[in-house]
Length: 419
Image (tube, rainbow, N blue to C red; front, side):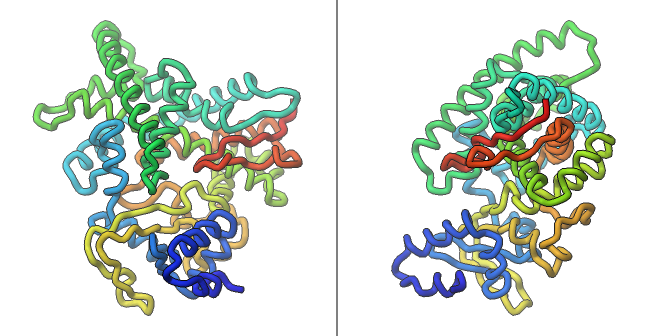
């Protein structure tokens, strides 16, 4: 039985069953389910959400941020870390803060960032590997970006456990808590308050250091504090702190998930492991990075990106699937589906390294393309590359599979390393 036949057989009045079965398919059968939707019902409505599955329609939703907004994320961010640019489409805060943060996250830093990540990953592997095995999520996937927060972003945190907790609690509430679970919300608010209080003290201390140093090797926080920002732009300490907090929120869980999911796919596809080891040992970053991004297409970190429909609008206008989306609809732009749309992605079933950049939507699109895209573009593949330098391989049994432990992010993944 097809997915849609089974779905349509459920009475329209049984809202919970209709929503539940779709949620289950996305967890367990996403690729074939999305393939059927693209073919038969590319814009698919359930009683709770709408799903957009074709490549061009996904990009349309993500590019029309005036209509399909991040309103639902914005309110969550405000109560945790303060008014944040990512939750304010087409506003002065969004334009000013994003421009400033892109300036201090300089692309010229990327070779140095890659060197930092390589060293941090080697250190993490040396600390945590035991008898030829290592659990990757906490010991590498989360630990390396947290430590990069200290060496590059400029705030090491009071301890790693606090940084882990702050990043996970805020990321979960901002981007995964569609049902507004009060426990998730309370954890994020508490984490945000602790994080911003810590940063307030750090800013004061860092200013004292800046006044007495001539060091030119600036981290991101120091660059912000030294920036000559004109009066009247409103970039006071509270805005600065919110933007620095966002670097932690956005970098840890997403990096960890990308690392473990890309690595698993690289090990699952025949011939890719040997190709990756060869590229890693040759320092062929272009080849190796291309393998990583293609691997993530097979199991992307953001398979569904949700938006809130601000006003009645027409989607896919001028096509046979043209349809009105009414105000208030929560719509999922299914990036995981778009990256398998054969009308735009040639031979999507094949693991093909070197695809054109438009084949990937790993970092979002248009106004909400990831602010830290360039840092992530070297951090994620470099962590994976170092692991391949240790001849990483899968192990048998449940322990050798990615375990989400019922949550939105990977929590455990054990692999073998050569000693």
